[in-house]
Image (cartoon, rainbow, N blue to C red):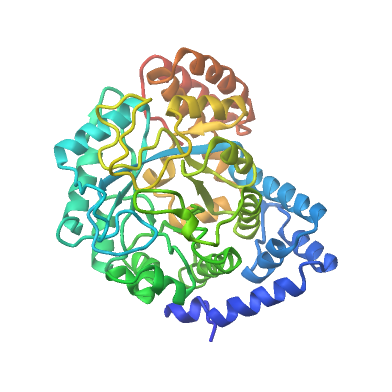
Amino acid sequence: MYNPKSLKAEEFISNEEILDTLEFAEKNKHNRELIEQILEKAIPKKTGRGVECAGLSHREASVLLACDIPEMTEKMYSLASEIKEAFYGNRIVMFAPLYLSNYCVNQCVYCPYHYQNREIPRKKLTQEEIVAEVTALQDMGHKRLAIEAGEDPVNNPIEYILECINTIYSIKHKNGAIRRVNVNIAATTVENYRKLRDAGIGTYILFQETYHKESYEKLHPAGPKHNYDYHTEAMDRAMEGGIDDVGLGVLFGLDMYKYEFAGLLMHAEHLEAVHGVGPHTISVPRVKRASDIDPNVFDNSIDDDTFAKIIACIRIAVPYTGMIISTRENETCRNKVLGLGISQISGGSRTSVGGYAGYSADERPHDTEQFDVSDQRSLDEVVKWLMDMDYIPSFCTACYREGRTGDRFMSLCKVGQIQNCCHPNALMTLQEYLEDYASSETKAVGEVLIAREIHNVTNPKVKEKALENLEAIKKGSRDFRF
């Protein structure tokens, strides 16, 4: 029986409820009156506190996704853009992945790190190699990392992950520093989540891969990850362990996308119902080619138009949640979806273990890659590309460092007040990037952008202080935040 407040995976992700939802959506996909009502419900409303948004249930959002009326799709895109602008403005947060180890005991059939893959060399970074990798990332300009590792209790125990986090935070190189480490590792225990919290991580990220239990068990035939319930209930254990920023995601292409979409939103509803705060982020990766992996084997792939519609519908359904798209997607695809809800992207990414240190921007090792990187531009190129489209590349980590996480972040975001901090913080961290890392061409574009965007800070005192800080950054000071 479906129960969003249950702590049992099969009750808060109910197969019966998803199938009923998909049937309802299919029956109503041409019901214009209902679709208009759903869209009307989701429109941002101005209140005395700011801007508020109702969001949608998994069933309402599934009706939108199923709808194939062209003009309704355009309305969805327009609404998604409106919602994204209301809560995230034109800021795009930048990050990079750092792969620590590709040792893994699981046999996930879609991942080249699976235990039986003999084509890929196994590698685990030493602390000295991590110093080199992080220094290279700092020299690019990154301030936020997402660390990744395969599941292997011998080679990648929690003690190794904690040591890596400590090493990353300790590295100060020129004006470089990693200010936020997000963690994407396998489902673990409440005790280990407490250890991660105490290590000062940002967001704990774990992709469900697929919410369809039967498919999940076939795709994970052996290894700890085979346990669907333990994996699906991981976010509840993370919350119990004191991590209040968690990130969801499915790997689109493994199973039926409409099923995954409904399950993903049900998981978000569950977190809200039980913990009072939904996911901090939702990621939307698609299956990509890699060593020993042919994405054509999976017959549930989705085209770019469907992918864009999924992103728009997620943004409408969960208006306050950050949305992430990685360099799995190429420039054309990323360009299309930025305005539909995406608020975080990676830049200059390498998905191999030890892929940064010792390599130029045009070089990249392929032997230990987890997947092909479609967008192979440097961070500087991505930053300039964003600014050319009037987006503000943001390297801000202020909310995490000021304790604005979990329900504290969401309470501010839900009334639009977070922008009083985020907009000037984005501009100040961009100014740091321009001074320390940008090419002359990128810096020239950025200076014009900052000069224009600073006038969009509506609070006079905040604007005055931000202007002072921008000048101080030009003179060598760093790390200002509201």
